[in-house]
Length: 425
Image (cartoon, rainbow, N blue to C red; front, side, top):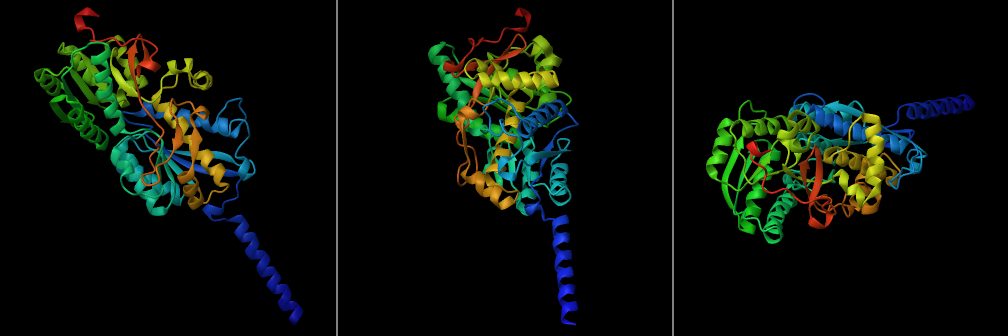
């Protein structure tokens, strides 16, 4: 009788062991594949930008899972060595530019797809809601592209951002204007701010007004408009009436294109247009407007001409262009970098346990020579989880290419100022 009882207990124990092995918890998942959720705009007005970013993430994963002669984290080994060569599998989701869909997709990724971490979402408004879901489920969320200052002011424990954000970018604008006055002898006293009405545009406006005051520039107009507009005639007439020397727009792609078309229709052009990235550096902006989109200045975090001083930029861009048929830009470079950092952190953690990944990100340091960005590196602020080593540049679109024009020591060509009038192009 005692022998039968012993065998029964052994069978039960073996059964439990086999069941646990077959259905591990997400944090203890067998490390042959690490699942990461990536939520981006794949349809809607920013679909083309979404494609640039998801392509960049796909390339980063190929480099991590394969073997490349690149001085990037995990490039020279196959998979994640600290997880026995586990590979990264990205599950993409489309938020359509809508915050409620982004949050729902984040919930689905966590509860159904059992991802170890999330990344995304480009739109600051979507990043806001999606990261709330991640915080509630205690899943790490790495944001490579959204720049609303408030995202890292919420006290979230699981949210980390690699890109510089709108506050330092806005200060860069006025430092650039001061340098232009000092070194190029231009006369600039006033700016007009025009921005869309989501968290991205409103955050930009707050930062720009703050630094306009700090650096002594008059804000001649502050115009907020409803995103995805169908006509901007009224707004452009207000810009003209303001008499501002420089216009500072914050718009996604479709709006940026429509603004430039309206500028041309109304024959309006200030001394300079100094854009907060987003739609003004998108591939669709260049393709749709052609010469009419030129001479715009934009803050950026990356430019292809920086390869002259950082050859690895050209190497990675060559692989990207060969595979996807176009050059990288600031958006895709940031997404690529975000994926590399997140995978590197998971490897350093040696685990897919969300808490261990979070703890590793808090201590994470990557030097600037191990990345394609012109940054000093990546290290997250202990309180906000904002990368403290990023920085911005200013580029100008000339002859179909973005050229670095500031800081002057990084410039690949002189800035064209003022923008030529429409009848002199």
